[in-house]
Image (cartoon, rainbow, N blue to C red; front, side, top):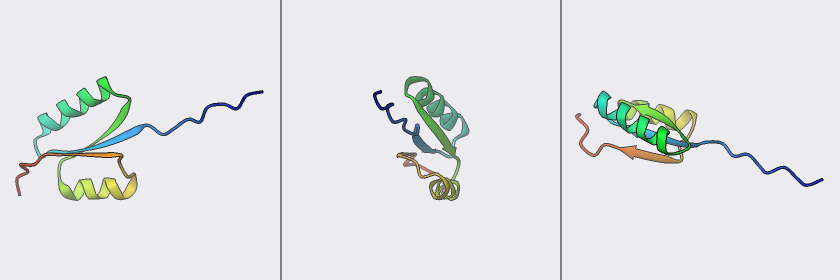
Length: 67
């Protein structure tokens, strides 16, 4: 009997963007074209909370966030 292949957890991407439309669009594109889970984050505080609870494999961050 051959061993079963190991199943891995889905790839996680945290998307930080203060624009809700951009955040939603980027999340949908990523989910549709890649096998991944997207954690949409509207603020750095939310990103920090998400990263502490379930660390993402990749951070996608808007470089022009409002303060």
